[in-house]
Image (cartoon, rainbow, N blue to C red; front, side, top):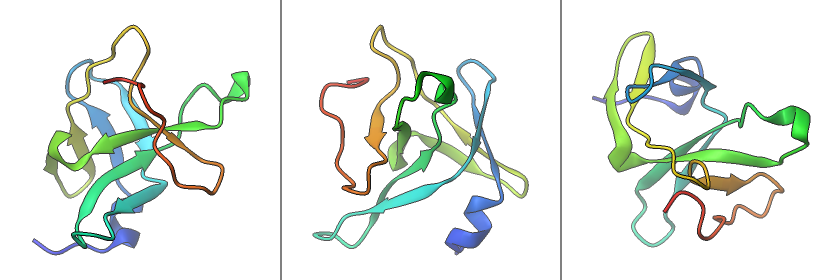
Length: 98
């Protein structure tokens, strides 16, 4: 199945672990070494805390890409889900959710 980033951005992301809607895709991470998609990024819903860290969803955690939504499997830990810096640097936040 081929899909464009534009098509991905229109789909709602739903976590199958807790049934929560996570929002829509805001970014995609591609490995320069392998030229493969390593994951997707959705906005963090804790914006009122002025948290600039978005949630990174590793590609291996995507369960199904459907017509209307993307099903993912993300388990929250005591430190929260894996985060991704949204400051333009595109760096992973070490230690988050791992």
